Image (cartoon, rainbow, N blue to C red):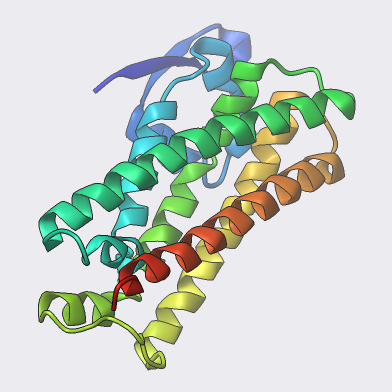
Length: 227
């Protein structure tokens, strides 16, 4: 696995020593030391890990059967999952780069000093907590997968039971922590204040939520065509 060579910034910088940190180590450290972690990545290798997070995020999002059953009218389950994966990955790629462009542009308007690649890197490295949240949100849909595997009409989904509600709460906690990391990362990448970073992140998240809700409404509609 690829490794970055991190100077011990903020810890032993005066010694001019270096230490190695793996991709996994960086994923763990960004939870509690987001600014330090993303600064080292931006300084040493901007863009590192971006495509890993984009593609992994798309895969986890596709585990939510909401997207797959939109294609079941025209193809078997395996192909339907593949089609959903393809479109979600394309959506993730476009959303990531559009969101990074908006965050970079708004940051510059608000006095930011970062580069586009720095902002994109900061955006990507806010992903570890949201990937965990995405997995839990997808796992909440397990009863819907069981319906699909039995060949039953997955609609309507029906009310959630207690363990789905619990998973939803846990997922929301991780999603909120992802926002904390995203705000810290953008603060560091753009060298802007907390409130400016929060505003930019909230604006981008709002756009993404509108897009995803629209997609979720379209997909069930596709399933019901010609019924």
